[in-house]
Length: 85
Image (cartoon, rainbow, N blue to C red; front, side, top):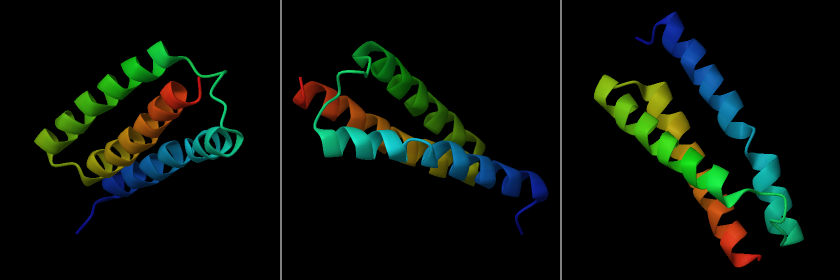
């Protein structure tokens, strides 16, 4: 059974991960990544991967799900930044 804190973690994961969707969509649709900082997204991506490893170590479903999806969205933004120069 999932405890209340894990439910809070899942809700936080949903909200923070979903916050990337508008930026991914806008960048993909406009084919422009001018406003994105490659350095920031590379550092953020490494941080997310480290959080994912930590989540796996803790066996925290909310951390694993959130950081896996956020890593994918961040990776897409990095690809868009490199592609849409």
